[in-house]
Image (cartoon, rainbow, N blue to C red; front, side):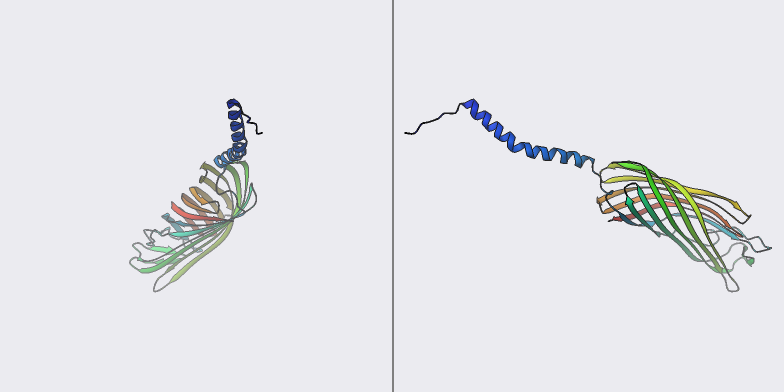
Length: 278
């Protein structure tokens, strides 16, 4: 004989709801923290090595001069005297990040100009006088290596603020050549610099960076002095944690005197770049 056991309707509803709760609770428990983590996570901060390359097209302003022992050199303008034109350059950046708030940084910026023109005024360079209407060939090279250390004293999930200390190795070469004379200037020096670097993530995959650095080198033995100031403001769209696309604006100003040679240089303009991280 088989007995029929009837479960009350309220009990059936309770069992169904309890079963659904048991099944859905683990899913909800896993989904909720993941959603919160997803809202807080940013791309571009999980790496130990970063390599970047940029293409910079700065506006041109530069003046150089070189004296002889008894002859004062002319202030030679890059554009109006030498005929240099606005040119695009590459810039290379390398970062090693041994810990979250520590970065070892290296940057190499090679800038080179060449031109053929005719002087419209008499130019004196390293004691040689180049007359008016003389066809000349000119070249200028400005290479800067920056090696430094950054400590991010304020670090949060959506940004950081740090201080930078670095050494800059500057190699400057200028040459003016004509049919009767060739004069060449070569100057190398090492200068310090300090600065501030900050980053803020306005979106999980979009970071805004700002850096200002420089130094004022007092006159040494009447032969050496200089003033350096660099500004860099850029944004990075991180396609993945390992790859970012960048666009920014940079300004670099240098007034440098090494014995009898002087360079007054200003470069500023937009740049575009890529950042690769590992």
